Length: 116
Length: 111
Image (cartoon, rainbow over all chains, first blue to last red; front, side):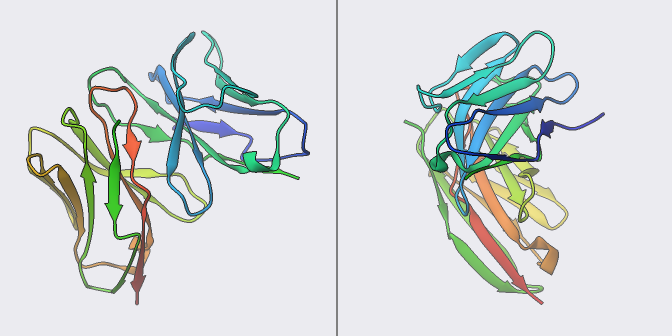
């Protein structure tokens, strides 16, 4: 059973370009969370998705950022017109059931975005 | 809103000593408390968790205790080894779908 997969592992973009980050959850998991981590800081929640639904995007900036989790394929976090402040590690995590019950989250290896 | 305070931010111990990291939370509805270990450049990995219906859970050299009345929970690592050196994050999850993470504790184990 493969774990959570993310690609690319490293991404370099120039200011103004688009960054597209992908996350494939663990087999059998239908809940995906995206987090952002700055160096020497904690994990900041961005968005929580189920298949074809955004459940909570309260941690995601309203402009330039968007996320999706289609019926088929990976979840995608898209950052348009990147700026230097977007440089960070972006982790996704998946869980079997998110709701009111508290199931474990398993993290992917992360995508390290560098904006030059 | 939900908040998790984690202390200390840095913890330095000698190999073989014990290490304790504490977290406090504010949401009375919190019912799940995981701990993650993150080595440099790696993903956070779940190392132990506890649910609100128990007060303590142990797994070899790692234990977690929960005091729901005082709203705090702690990670205990005994007989520390250099490979325990990492950043440790506590988290809590309650009625909300969204887990809240502490800011992390950098544990350094000196050989």
